[in-house]
Image (cartoon, rainbow, N blue to C red; front, side, top):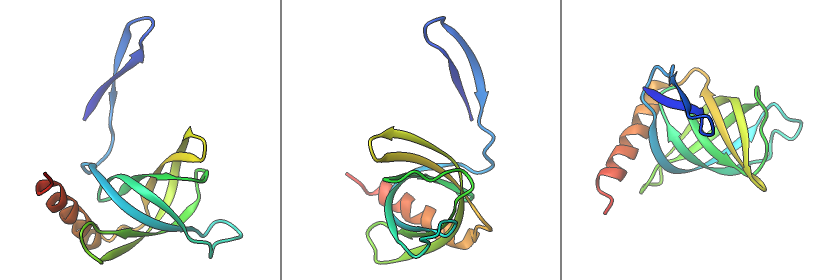
Length: 130
């Protein structure tokens, strides 16, 4: 995927290449996570998934997670009681509002079968939404 990026004031635009190997799908999933890089690794936090692929996900959190943080993530599948546990590593984080961060996570050793269940659930959920 390519997208245009540039300085709106000068009108200059250049192509920015998306180097992702797998397609990323918009998703609205609840999640719980623990930052096992921190001293308080038993504390469970909640967040929202923005998008997901076989190798990563974007999420909103209420706390800053710096690059390199290791996460244990529990994804809640839509319209079901099923949950999928994955491990991830924070690649980037950006503050978007007071106590709201957009976080990019690379999945560590992603279990593709588990992620295919997540992607299929997202596809079914979005296909039948009115």
